[in-house]
Image (cartoon, rainbow, N blue to C red; front, side, top):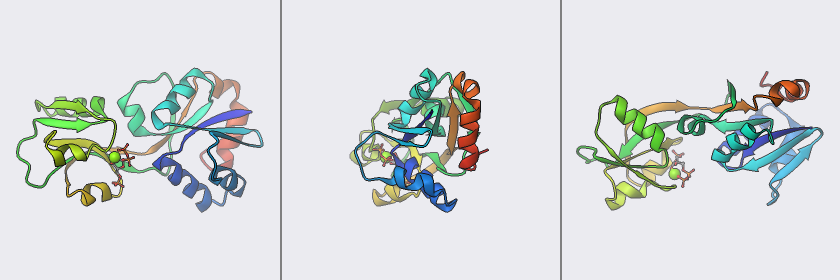
Length: 200
Ligand code: PRP
Ligand code: MG
């Protein structure tokens, strides 16, 4: 049995759409079930559903052998995992955004303080960061900060809140990650699953 860590966020929709596009019927139904259960088993594969930032934690410890995670998570935090490959879904990007008539950016709200501080340090911009846990678009609207650093996918959240992108920071894609030990000790099972879903 191998354990695959998935997230039930936005990336999950992209992953199930990928399974549908590739006609991987055996996985579509069990993974699309409307249930509060946090795991499901298909043949020799146990899928667990974690919060995005927790996927690498499960994989690092080895209780999950592989995981599918947005590269935003592994850009923001450091994990002792194998960063195996990029996957053909989950594309979006990090941007700096704010109100159309904003002047200088002195304060920025974000969930991604490491990504943001690296970016502003490289640009030699003196910016104070305010850490928020989500819905960061509220910060410039309410005057908490001058702007935000956040993920943009369709652009609808920015648009619906009257915000614009100032600059793109970094592309984001789904990534396959693996435990450094079990990726080799369970090589055959992992390889079989990854081949089946067309990743290898
Ligand atoms: C994410 C992200 C943006 C939005 C981008 O938020 O933080 O707000 O999605 O997607 P879009 O460009 O397609 O609108 P999410 O809905 O995951 O919630 P959170 O920010 O509260 O975590
Ligand atoms: Mg958001």
